[in-house]
Length: 171
Image (cartoon, rainbow, N blue to C red; front, side, top):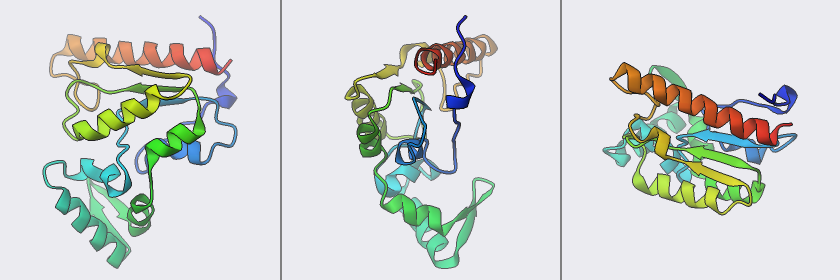
């Protein structure tokens, strides 16, 4: 198997949207996004309470007023919410024009259909955008399943899909 240039790889994750990478493009060659919360503005934080977005807005107001809040077992700064208000991750993706792999599962649960559809459209608009959904249809947001065999298959598919993509673009 071919190998990717490790010095060209960078990893990011929560807190902070994965697509902060194109905003700080410096040396980034390609992106691999696994179930990103790419909503515009605070919609990028919808996973904090997918059932009641007003609760996300209330968390943001509390964090911005008090400097931080504790949610999901971590302290989240008010600055993150302030910066999220002005964010448009999918616009940043389109502007970056980077080769991008996007995966979503069939049972995201914590991300709206709108977020997923808008992100898929953004990636599909890229010259080297690749959307891969089918191998992950039985997984939850974390690419897991209660069935051990399904979970193992999801893990294998995610790894193989990502490695193949990165090897192609990080040579």
